[in-house]
Length: 402
Image 1 (spheres, rainbow, N blue to C red):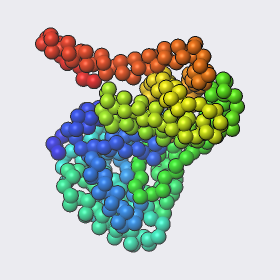
Image 2: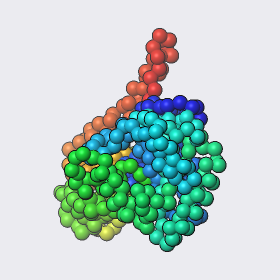
Image 3: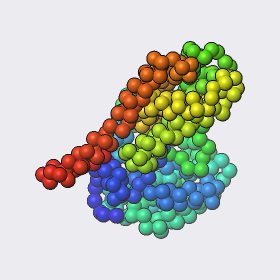
Image 4: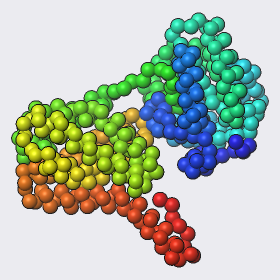
């Protein structure tokens, strides 16, 4: 790892090109971040070491959520809590700490493992069983182990932080919230500070909440909109709101899955096509395997396939477009994305409902919307491919990356 300082934007560019070790990881808030300095293999090592020692880890700091200049933009409360400079490094399990050193918190610094200005990775132990002395011994063992792996940056392990040991993530969240409030000259709402604190760390080997009240709300709203959309032409059946509720309840995860497929395959033509294909398969499976037999609609499989394909192109294009924008945000942003997407899709879903009845106008409208979905999702890839082709014909034009 080159010894230098990077702005966050510069480092993200290097991560995307594969020139700097990184992988995608979600903060406790649900926001998707670049985990700076840790690729999948290194992250797997952290997970394995935590699991082997049967200890939870809170992974904190600029390598998780970016330097302070980026952290302050993640939640309004953080603008008041986080100074952009520091003059000390807190002592960890083996690291003695440093005083009177000027540390710029607006960049990621790779100055070597022995330079106190280097951006480190902070690991806080969370354990409900071990006594304080056992935790301190474990922290020393883990810090020695991880710093012997030659990752190029220091790893600090803390058995206690702000004078406290932690038996659960909730305890850490409470103490860290109090610490953040102590740094602010403003009077900050406790709930807001807890939400802000969740932007700054991720957890390993600790239980995560799988569903939220926002997910339940989305399930109920989607059930209602499913009734409006599909029963507009086919009549009410209890299976429609039941299946729609499940899709809304897990809407955040479906959106993450679709966006993850597109991003994972380069966010170009192949990735978007794969995500749309998966969306069509999910739609066909839900309609043919659940709604149609449970509701006794009696629709032929060929019509379900045709409707699902055009339906996916029509509203799936818009849905994937929005998924990719909302799925990288925190849990609330993801949940709001589901509401927006489902609301727009409800109107398009009416066309699918009448398509099943054989209405000519619905067939026409469905394929017009499908054309719009194709342009929305695949237009940028086609444009970039054409510009690359044109650049070959005209050497004076630089190729444009997709």
